[in-house]
Amino acid sequence: MLPEPLYPTKAAYLAAPQKRVLLYGMSGLGKTSLSNMLRAAGGWFHYSVDYRIGTRYMNEFIADNFKREAMKVPLLRELLLSDSVYIASNITFDNLAPLSTYLGKPGDETKGGLPFAEYQRRQDQHRAAEISAMLDTTRFMDRAASIYGYPNFVCDTSGSICEVLEAANTDDAVMRELSAHHLLVWIQGSADHSAELCRRFDRAPKPMYYRPDFLLQVWAEFLAHEGKPADKVDPDAFLRFGYARLLDSRQPRYAAMARWGVSVSAEEVAQMQSPADFDALVGAALDRRVRS
Image (cartoon, rainbow, N blue to C red; front, side, top):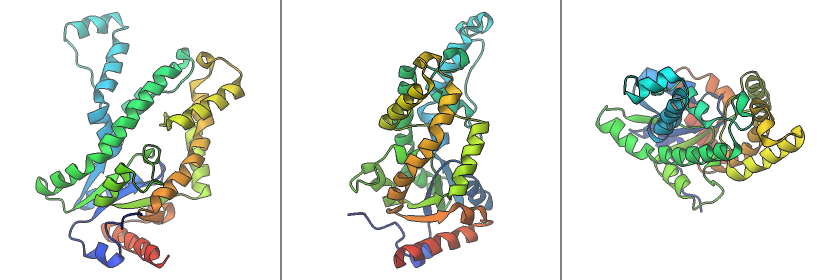
């Protein structure tokens, strides 16, 4: 049996002295923009799961990879060995390039690809890091209130959240922990949004996280389509090949998560101008949930 949402009704949410919300959905639908708006208006602590992944749980992996590449350059090798230079990533809420670059893409190494086994290893690292970063939210809620005095908390999740948990399982430990401390809000895109995301991705493909079984399926389909050995395929071609398939595969997984909370449309989110607008949006979503 599913647990009741943290705020079961609109009245309960609006009356809550501390509002704790988790936003999820595909990257590009407004999670971070909405979180930034709430933070800038004051009273809301913005917790970015991707930022936490990159700065806490994968920081050493990322920095070591930079160093590994630098060691191939004689001048940098000498400076590194003498501790004369310092190499680190500079991840921000709005620039997660070091994390996505480390995650990488499989294929021809001369085109920036990784051997498939190494790609799988980094995917596994990301999965563990994402789960840990989500479970950290409860502690950060306490820190936000006790240290900084923020009454409200918004968790800005990674687009891959639905890949690392099983929302269809009512006993999923991560889902139960998240729903116990947040109201889960799905930012749901339309078919037009999906088409636009695909167009954007085609112009600038970036590494993504795939759940292991689905990765193997898409990789096998891609190799069959290309008719080339795994170490000769174009890595960006794989990213483009897999993206629309990944979007489609995530929709039922997001929908399973929505049973634990509420959903709003990306069009509604795009109209948000203030925390009051957001509160009204969440309240309306809770009303819809109660009536359904």
